[in-house]
Picture 1 (cartoon, rainbow, N blue to C red):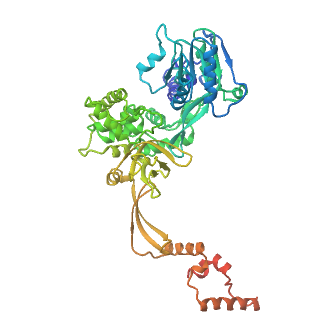
Picture 2 (picture 1 turned 90 degrees about the vertical axis):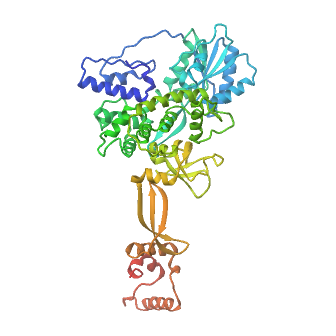
Picture 3 (picture 1 turned 30 degrees about the vertical axis):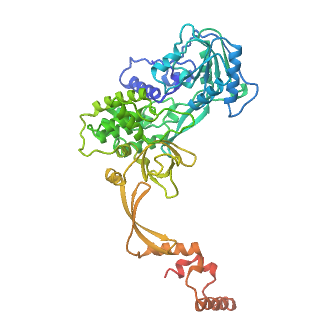
Length: 567
């Protein structure tokens, strides 16, 4: 039974595809049931080869009220006005849907200045279970409440006391870019199905009202369903699961949406770089070890290569498996240094208060996860040499090893060839090399959110199989000459350059000719004798057009360097 299938999570789509495979080959008696209040049911029925069964359920009617005119992209002022209107016109608690914590914090600040009698609360995925429970189950004689929520409240949770919904109509989702291997957070309009789900929250207890911060015309123009996660997610975990299942090609299974080829190919390349898949896409012995840990393949690789005796590796994997424990503080940027989080974990482990902005309660949760991962990996073989935290991090994200550019603090080049940046005032912005964990793809350069400084010597030793040394010829513009260099690279990063003996041969000559073409014939050592010869030949050609005189005007010489200058 697959419930709330309209959420179209990657796990749900994968689970359904595997169950259909089981039905066709192993268990003819297995029956599948897919359930949702807002699903495109016919498409699923066609995939299953089954029937559609509907039920009206027990929802009360909800009065939907749209804006009379569009407010464009700036929905926060309109949402504030609708909340104040709902507080005046309706009884009971008000649930407000917003795209993220930033918008929630700004709206809460504005509402508190309005001197409302309502209690203002927040509900989002970064809250611990106790804090969520206080919002979900209010006391018997509580004051009217305004609950500011992300789409975590859309289907997953039921909030008692809600009679009114105010919907900003936006959601913030990571969209994976297979070209860069990074995700970009985008604010998108919710689908019509999601809007219906949100409005339904007002009809759980009795007739309700939903205020929408968009027009009826905009509602009709919105997509019917939310996009499936499989179309915009990192597919590395899915590719790993299918390789373990024995399926190297997604075409072997039945899908509601087949995995996009570009994202699939990018995931295969990553897993091959992590030694989880062989060149034919089959899972390796190392890949089976990674799959057994139940983590993203990157973090599992960090644990296995880091060694079972390395508790630091378990701490890093735990940190990157969950939300950042650094508290959000309005007006203050979160530091990117993962080491600060590791220091907080060490403090709490020693029963001390963590320094800085770390959430002690969240750190304790991460320590329990770290202990479990450590126990899982304790029997794995490991080296006596202890790797630094930055080196361990580079195992999980080898293509995100970053080298500081010469153009200024905070700007980096990744081993993948992409650009990345940190705010110049971040503590890591002066590091020569970083191992980057979390970043998103910007329009020009990705923004680094979590990283660690790492030593170049440790990097080149740990990633020796990816380090390449090549002999290169280049034109040295300041010295106006061809130079030969021995260059050491890690992906797109140039780690070292050493000039070697002066070059000879066709490649050097080719570079000379290219330089002449760029600079024009005046860069050659002309003198009066050579220019006089050119003029006499040109004059002779004009006097005797059929005399077979060579063409020596500058335009012809520039176009035919190989015929006269190369010899």
